[in-house]
Length: 541
Image: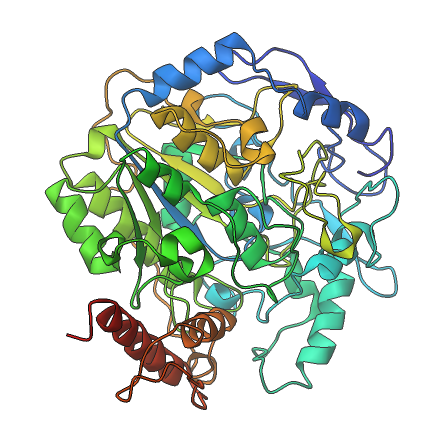
């Protein structure tokens, strides 16, 4: 992670699970132009693994997590797509020297971070402002995001070295390679002006006023990592089931393990999954969601109605709109549309009667090939005995992703991190939080070892101020050339629906997905197929 001595983390204070977080300091890093915090090592891979594999937690941590969560009756998760922490929130506290509003250290950017291009010239981070060309479609193309691409970005090689010390110096060169092959494929759209250096673009807070205001107004975790160093579906499997069953790419689209939704049902606790404009893709990924009653699934307007009525279940999982003209924020889709979605989710909850006892978690499934300067730590606990693809052992995390914790029981300006000596925060921290709140058993060894986020909830009286008051949601028109193309997730959704046993008018279940070319084609097919399946389950009424 930058070398055995580079950026070694030193704990100056044990985390008190009250109103303050631990303070962290770093010894100087290598003199290669990178920031002092860019060599995050969290001691060493060996000691991380030792601490993370410990099944015990400090009593203070358990007590505080439980007491913080005791006032929460609703946990809502909005998981967006494919953006790294630095790319979205690296400059969140740049105006304060990377110190939060509450005085806590923040692992942000200094503006001096660089990555080399192919000839070795240093490419510095750049600021994405509202007037930057294609600002809300940066980095202008779809970066590499799979396991090999992530290794190239972190280590400079497609195969991780032993030990896997990352330098995070391969983002520009990998993006250059990606642009070269995407330019030859009709599947991808590269916006005008996109160059390898575009991957170093970082949004200024005023460019993302909604996400930034919530991050400053409530809590942001600057040390939250994707569960695996790879693309979307394995990481989404981790947030639902605590494992990807060894899979590390999107070739595997469904899994055979229990989920948090099944755990909740077994405990007679309610849950819902909402899609945005079509019924949710997540339902198709697991046996216990496919077989669950249709009442657990809906569309975004139904989520808004339930929030307004105060009838949301204990756990709610929200999907964005998956299309290229949607609001998932997948590169190079419209980030402004995602800002609107975050705004709408927040106000649906805030204006409902259950707001004082609600915790909203906004996160991203993986980094999507976007630049981040913090090497992912080791210390990940393998979830199960599944054999990892590509020889991966699931003992290290993916790249940092933005995670914002929103609740009127969280103080303004909180920076939330895991307790020293425990496993770093990842997507299974969401599972752990649900399990801690409602006394559920863990799904795998990963979520058993994970740290919950109840300790962020330190207020006993709900706040009444509104950090988004007066914030204007940015607007940007999606280019027609981009909007017409189907997205990868639409293709995944359609394929999974095509596999379902839906009898036709003659009672035959054999089905071949029709030729679908545009995003609208896929959207229409998904709606029709979902409707036919639900009708067939009701007896063809």
